Every structure is written in C-alpha cells, then in structure tokens.
Image (tube, rainbow, N blue to C red; front, top):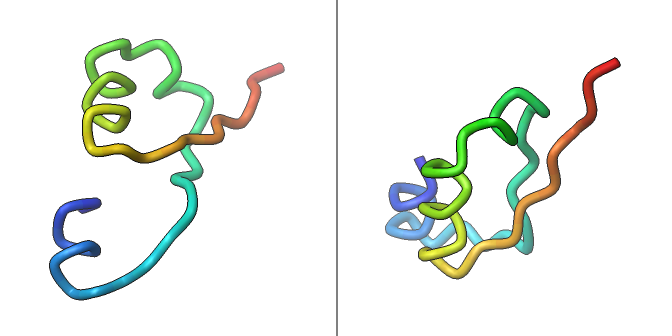
Length: 44
C-alpha cells in the first residue's frame, strides 16, 4: 500500500497503524526500510 501511494505521487509524513501491528516486528521493519515513520495506537 505504501509503495503504491508513493508511485502515485501521494505525499505523507507518517503512517498510522493499529496497535496490533506493533506486535509484528517484521512489518515495522519493512515500514522503516521504506524511510517512513509510523504512529501506532494503543490497546487497553
């Protein structure tokens, strides 16, 4: 999804993710490798 957004010229400063994705280190590393910042939400 991030790659498609960039290919289409969509500019963004961060990626908002559900807190559940914070439990997926591989996903977070992939976002970081693309040079993106991410902001997770928290779970109660």
